[in-house]
Image (tube, rainbow, N blue to C red; front, side, top):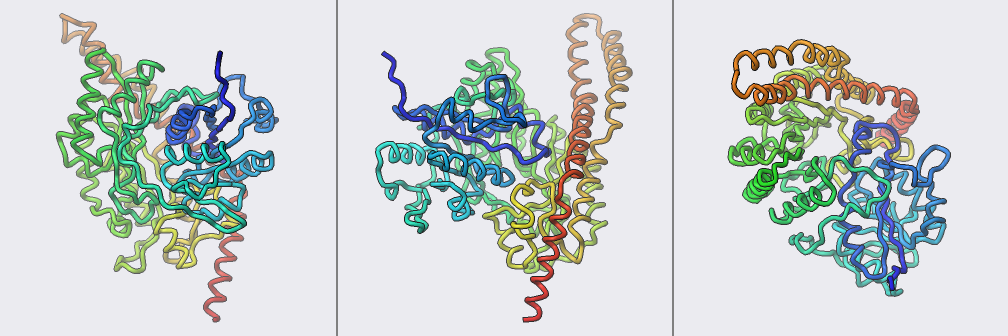
Length: 540
C-alpha cells in the first residue's frame, strides 16, 4: 500500500520583470538555494515538495496563461499547494513575488519567503502577503515551520523567523549559522518541475570574508567539505548525465587548502572515468597570488573564472574597501591568463564617492576612459558592466539614503534593481542618464557585430592554416595532432568571438527592451521629487 503525503509545499523562483543580461542563461540553469531547501523539506513524512522556476519553463505540461506564462490559478486547481515558498534574493523579482503571494494568500494558502531582500525588508514583506520571513539559511528552519503548521503549533519556538501576531512584528531567537553541510542530503534536482538544466548550479561556500560596502553578504565564509562537494558532482554526473557546472559561491577558494583538495579529487575522478567536465566558478582576483591553487583548478577542468573587478579606478576601489589597486588587478589578470583560464570580468560603473574619505572627484569622461583602457589592457575574455545597485541591507544603500540620493521606490520600483538602470543621483552634478549611457557604450563597444566576421575569418583562414601546419609537420599520429590543433583553434580564436557575437545580440535585445520601457519618465519624476525634498530641507 502506497502512503500518500497529505500536504504540498511548493517553492517559486519568480520570473525576471523584463529582459536582462541574465535572461539568456536563465532558461538553462536555476537558483540552487531553493533546491537545497526543498530537498530538506522533502524529508518530512507528510509533505510533497516541488520547485518551479518561472524563468525556466519547458515542455507542454505546465499550465499557461494568455501570455504564455505559468498559470497559477490553473496550477492551484490541478495540484493545490498548502504552503507556498518564495526565493527572494533577487531584488528585481520582488514585485512579482509579492503579486504571487497576494494571489496565494487570497486562496487560503500559507506563504513563506527567504533571501537577502526580505531579510533586509522584513516589514515590507509581511505587509505584502508573506506570512513568515525566514532569516538566514532555510534548510532547518523550513522543516520546523512546516511541522508547526502541520500540527497547528505556535511559531514562537521556531528559531530564525519573523511574522506578524495581532499586527505586531515578532522576531524569534536567531538560528545559528550552519557550519557542517555534510548533515544534509544531496540536492535533489528531480524536485524541479518543468525545467531543463544544462548548467548545474552547485555551491561550496556560504558567506564572505570581505566587507564590501555594496554587498549584503556579511557572514563569515563557511565551506562544504571537499568530500561533500565531490559527492554532489558525482551524483549529478551519474544520475543526470551532468557535464557543465557553475559553482555559485561568492568566493570559490575562501578556504584555499580545501579548495585545492577538492580540485585534486575532481581531477582524479575525471581521469578515472575518462570524463571532461566544464566548470565555471566565481572567485577573487587575489587568488592569482597562489600558484598551487591555480594549477589545481586548471587540472580539475575549471575553465572559466568569473571575477568581480568592480572598478579599475583606484579612488573607487578605496571607497569600496577592496584592499587593492588597479595595478594589482592588471597584474593578477595576466596571471590568470598565463594559466589558461577564460576570464569573465564583472564591473560596476558610477560608484558614488564616499564624502567621509579624502578621495578626489574624477570627471565622468575620465572615469569612462579608465574603464576602456583597463578592459583593453587586461584582455578580458567576456565582460559585464552594470550600474551600481544600492541594494537593501547594504552599507551603500544606508549611506545614499542619508545623503538623500536614492530615487524613491514609489517612483522607481524594485523591478529596476538589476544593474541596468540608474537608481541614485551621481556625484558632482552628473545626471543619472549620463551614467547609463556610458555603461551602454562600454557594452556595445565590446560586444560588436564585427565579431561575426571574425568568426567567419577564423573558420575560413585560421583553422585550415592550423590543420595544414599540423599535417605537414606531423606524419605519425596525424589525426591525434589535428584534433589537438582543432582544440587550440577553438580555444584561442573561436570561443571568445562566438560569445561576444552572442553578447551583441543580447545587448541589442536589451536596448530594444529599454527603449520600450517607461523608466525615463519615472526617473524624471523621481529626480524632481528628490530635488524638491532637498530644497525644503535647505529652507528649514
